[in-house]
Image (tube, rainbow, N blue to C red):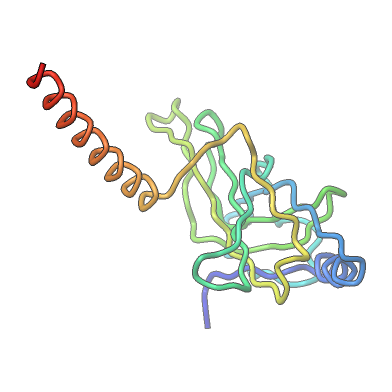
Length: 176
C-alpha cells in the first residue's frame, strides 16, 4: 500500500458525480498545504478541511497526466517569501471553497529567507479520476513553465537552425 496518496473527499465525489451528469466540470481553484499539527495525516473522505492549514494559494496549473489517462496533475506554487513551516498535507478547493480532494505529503520544510534559505516550492499533486472531462483544466497565464524534455528539444532545434543560418550567412558573404 502506498504511504502517500490523494483521494477525493465526500463533497468532491458528490460534485464529481454531478459534474458527470450535468456535463459541467469541477473548477479546482485553490491549493492549501498544512503541517498536520506535526503529525502524519491519513486522508479520509469525510475531511472538510486540513488538520492545520498554513498556506493557501491559487492553483498554478491543472493538466492531464502523461503517465496515466485517468490522472490529472494539479500544481501549486508556494512563493519564496512564504514559509517557516513543514508541509505534511495538501488540499484542493473548488470555486465554491469546498475541499474536494486531500493528500498526505512527505514531510517537507518550507523555509523563508530569514531562516537563511528560501525557494519557490512547487507542489504537484496527482489525482485519479474515472473521467477526466469532469475536471476543468485551466492554465494560469501569468506562469510559464516547461518540462526539461521540451526545453531540451527546442534548444536542439534552435541550435541546428542557428548553425544552418551561420553556414548560409558564411556562404553568402564569401561568394560576393
